[in-house]
Image (cartoon, rainbow, N blue to C red; front, side):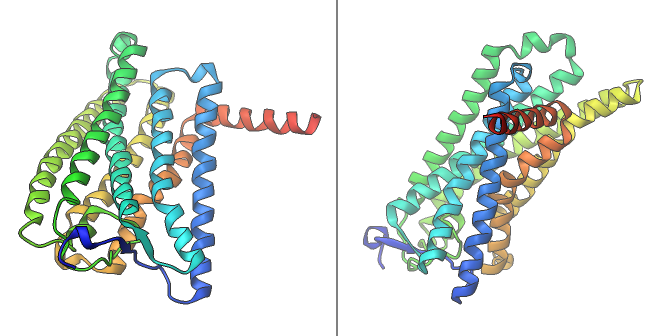
Length: 313
């Protein structure tokens, strides 16, 4: 294939060759997908229905759940369909859409996690200014900026990637379309354009990472000065879930996109992409709902009310 214009479809990497393992993969991914839908859906419904949770921290968590739902819905359904119907194909425009939405949701989530670290910093280090610095309008603007920055990042990378000449076939060594795998199909000289854009994105992402680290250094210093053990425990309970999510998200995504070519192997790439594309959206609701008491209580209250209402009716 001389260039991308002659490609009408791509071939995704299959998890298994035998029919039994393909069906096992389908049911496993279906279980993970339903768990992610249920967990994030519960958080969205709980925060929307409980007026006690209408504060900045839960507003940002609501946005995070929407992004998690979008990201996992971009990757898993197509992979499940391919396993169920014993095929590997995805259309050219389907691959373009997958690359765009994967980048959009993950970039927006990373920017939103940066905003959430600022929220925790203000809440713990500057509690008297919390209402002023994080009013409803400011929260909406920061969330909109995260979504907008994710959209712009995805648009630039997707347009640049698919403007390259693809001269190495159409087989993608991944269960969904992602930029590192598409670049392997491009001509080496043309790929330098995407590399320059990637370097800019790395510097931007590194700036967000430094902001998160500095915020948490200040947070831990303030928490350790809290005299009561109960106060320290409450402060940590709202910060540690966010820190755990950031650590999992950043470590796996950085390894997936910036690992040396010597570490690139289909099985390794598959495991790493699963860790950054599937695991965070599925476990984020569990991390937050188990560690933050107010949210956990609200979720259980919502579940019990719905169950009791269904029984009574």
